Image (cartoon, rainbow, N blue to C red; front, side, top):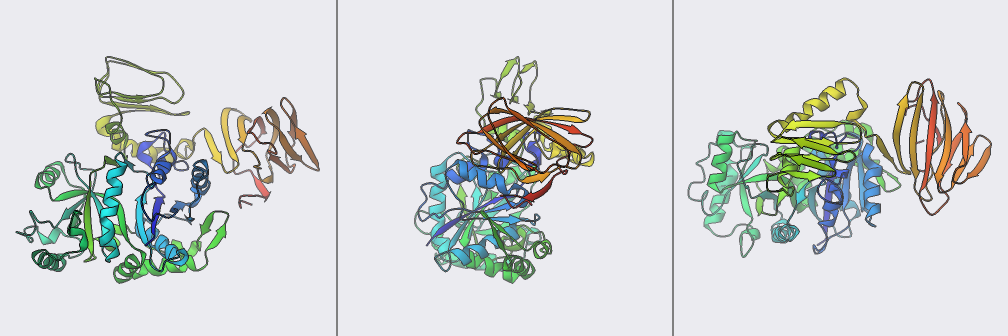
Length: 512
C-alpha cells in the first residue's frame, strides 16, 4: 500500500521573528543545519518503504518558495495544493485526502501527515515508529505520534494513552468532564478489548500503539509534572498516519460541513505550473478547525504510538536554543559572535559581529534589518512585537530586506527620499514579467552575466558594465538568456516606489 507524505507548510512562525516573516516563515529557513526546515522534512522521508512523492499544502503566497526548495533538492512534489486562506489542519488534511484518492494508483492510500517545520534528530527512530504504526493504519485506525516527554512542558497539548500498566486497572479514574468529545463509551470498549488481548494489531508483537484515552490542553506546571510522573501522557506532535478514506469517513461523521466545503473547493481546482488552485469562495466558506478538535478527539479509532526521536516543533527561540549545540557555559552561537562572561545565552548573527559581556539567559538574534534581544523566559512574547509591527504597518513583519521571487531575488540595499537601490539576481533562463510603472523610472546596470532587456519597442542585449534607462510608463522586461546567474543593480527614482506600482501584461509565473 502506497504511503503518501502530506507536508503541511502553512504556518507563519511569528515567535521566531525577526528571522521568520509572514512572507518568508520558519519552514523556509535553515535554522538547524544547511537545509531549510521544509527540506529537512523531505529528506527525513528517505529510506521509508513504499514512500511516494510528497503532497504539500501551502499558503498561496508561499507557492514559489515551496517549488524552489524542491528544485534545489532536485525533487518534485506530487502536488502543491494552494490554500487561498488559512483554515487550520482539519480542512488542510481533507484537501490532501481528497487529492490523494483522486490521483493515487491505489484506491485507498495511506497518508503520513507531517508539519514542515519540526525537528527530528533521530531519523531512524522516526522510521521505526512509522513502520510500527503501519499495521494499525492499514486496519483502519487513526494513528497519532505521541512524543515521549523529557520535561514538564507547558507549551504543548498532551495525549493520554490507555495502556497496560495504568489505565486498564482503573480506566475511569480520570474526571470524564475534562475529556473532549465524550470518549467515555470509547474507553469502555478499549478496556474490554485490552482485557481480551485483542486490541488493534499495533498492540501486538514489538510495536507499541495504544488506544487514546483523552486529549488534554496545554497544562500548568504542576499538572505537567503530574503527567510526566504518571508515564501515561505524551506530547501532542500533530503528526498522523491513516488511510485517506478513514479520515474522510470520520470527518464526514463529525464535521460534514468541513468535508462539504473542501469537496466544493476541489471540484473546480485549476492546475497552474506545479500548483493546484482551489475555488477561493468555496474554501473561504470552510470552518476553521484543527484536526484534533474535528476528528481525533471524537473518533473511537484513535491510537497513539510513542516517538522518542529528539523531536521539537521549534515554536520559539528558547526551543531552538534547547536543541542547539552548547559550550561549557551553556551558550549556543551561530555566525560572527564573541562572548565574554556570558552564560546560557543563544546568539545568532547573519551579517554583523555580535559581542556580549556579562549577560545570561538571553536570546540575541540579528537579521538584515532587525535585532531581537529577549530574556529566555519571555520569548513567547515575541509575538506581541509582531502584533505591534502589524498594527503600525511596518514592512519588517512581512519581508526581509532580501526578497525571493520565482525568477530569483532582489535585495534593497539603500533607500532615501525619491530613490531606491536594489541588487537583483535572475536565475538562468528566467525572466521577469512584461510590466510598466506609473510612478517610477529605473536605471539598470549589469554587474555579472548577460541581460536581455525589452525597453519599449527595443530589445537590447547587455553585458557586464553596460546599462539602460527605462522612463516612467515604458513597458519593459528583464531576462537572463545565459547559463549563469545574472547580477545587476537597479536604481529607482520617482514619487512612489512601492512594489504595488507594477502593471503586468505577461508573466511566465501566472501573476499577470
